[in-house]
Length: 87
Figure 1 (cartoon, rainbow, N blue to C red):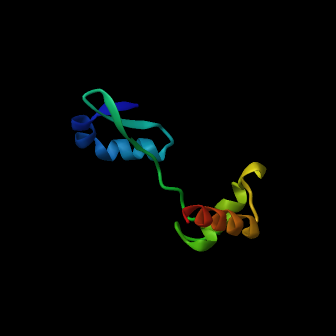
Figure 2: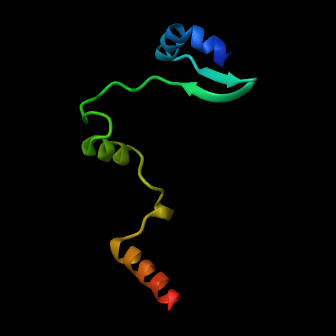
Figure 3: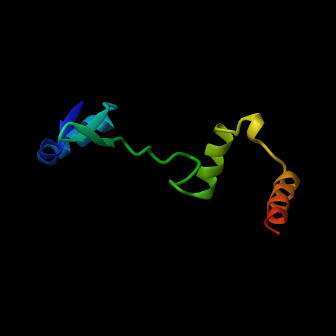
């Protein structure tokens, strides 16, 4: 569903209910999409939003691709190489 800003202002409660129900709600300014209403996920067993436990649980579900993984030693070596290049 796409609505303009004035319509969104007048129907905000209805639009929030639609977003909670899973409908994609886009708010447009003069026809140009500028915002999207999405529901905030309910807290799960990992803890409240932003908690370290929840962040680590997300990280476990979404690991870095193998090509992007580096060890601490590799990162330290890259940092040192960058610093050496400054001199």
